[in-house]
Length: 123
Image (tube, rainbow, N blue to C red; front, side):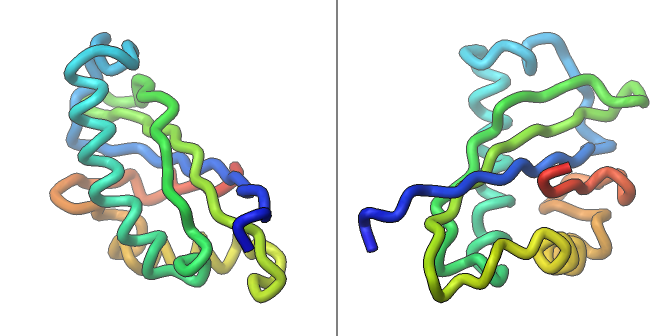
């Protein structure tokens, strides 16, 4: 129903082939906005295909951070879904498993490579 409040969860992962630059830290920089758009382009369809898909309302990138390596960029996002009686309690482990499978065992997101141990949901 339209009256249900959105529920949120965090999504974090590290891209190993996107060099972190300081302009990625500035939410109003062109680089932040264009990279955020690309992330949404890849993340949203995955979540729409997942078990929360019918209730999924979108993700917002909250930040990019420097990763361990020179070419690593950590991505932080907050995703939302409408809580609904037909959606059994939010199953973080199940969603993690689904996203892991859809990203080739947490290694690929579109043309980006992921650090396979970096995917976290509500981590």
